[in-house]
Amino acid sequence: MSNKSIDLGEQKDVEVYGARVHNLKNIDVSFPRNQLVVITGLSGSGKSSLAFDTIYAEGQRRYMETFSAYSRQFMGGMERPDVDKVSGLSPVIAIEQKTTSKNPRSTVGTITEIYDFMRLLYARVADAYSYNTGEKMERMSEDQILQNIFNKFDGLAVNILAPVVKGRKGHYRELFEQIRKQGYVKVRVDGEIKDITAKMQVDRYKIHDIEVVIDRLIVDGKDKKRLLDSVQTAMKMGKGVIKISDKDNNVAHFSKFLMCPTTGISYDEPQPNSFSFNSPYGACERCDGLGYIFVVDKESVMPNPKLSILNGGLAPLGEYRDTWMFQVLKSLAKKYSFSLSTPIEKLSDEVINIILNGSPDLIKVEVEYNKWNVQNYNITFDGIIKMLEEQNEKRSESATDDMDAFRKLKTCPECHGARLKKESLHFKVDGKNIFDLAS
Image (cartoon, rainbow, N blue to C red):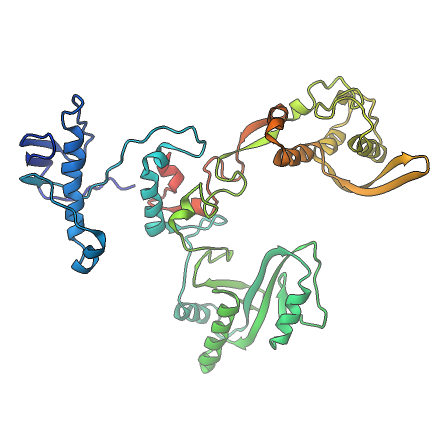
């Protein structure tokens, strides 16, 4: 942040003359500006009367006077404090003393409400940067978008694209049908232009980017109206975002919102709650704004590697019992050729990793309910760690202590302890994000 202070001419001090608020007895006092000044004294000596009811009140009154008469009628009047004169006064902020809190979401900034002012500052004046490339984000008007298209693609044949799906799974059969009914005949799926056909769909288990081809034209000055109409249509369908691609598949991204000019990622317009770790609009989604997460500790799950799985080598499961989880582990051992009787320290790293973190391969679990009823189930095994994490999410308070034995605190790998979404952390003032400033 800049160290420049407000220029009030040659006056270096704040001067108060004839202060008579509450128990102040017509006192005169001066103190230096732009320095830390402490007002101290016995209880009832007038410290708060001077700081809050005289100096702060006069600063607020002067600020209110800068508003129009129409605006002031909705704010209520502020009486002038009982003082002859206050000079050298710059804009003022008062932070009240607050009681401490054991809430893990509270900080000195939130308790004193200073952080509220910082959030407002970043929402209004911060510059946005791409979390992918570090480039400054851009927003463009329609005229600027058109000018950039002419600058980059003049004389070239281009596709004007409206993004409708970005980085999501699904078959999108209904979407393709809806696009076809609107009269469009081509889409760009994962970078490839395709004709829209009846009952068209894509792999539902893969992540896709889908854009509607709004128009295909040559960029020149002969038909600016067609280009403008196509850009406007694409902006409407793409909700403020469009792409332009040429025959070599070079793609340019444009948006009326904040957007990275290289990768096309976009941010919502910042609001004060975008920088609040107590709001879903600003909090890191991985740690819910706490800055840390609970992770299952491998050493706690396998505290004694000399034991086998059957003999209690997996602490959360204990010794062998006729339960579903042990049936799954028996099937897992059969598939990956290891024994539940082998001490854990003699199992391969690959097997231990599968036990802890699971495997995408299908395994067949045979469950014998009685000698006439044997059922086979084909499942994937997610691992002991995932099982414990799911139990933790569903656990009752009475089970907290049991779960804590297998968990430890870890700095959130997504926000690195900053508690905010990565988008929020890439708004900067003078090169610092709000976490840097608040730390």
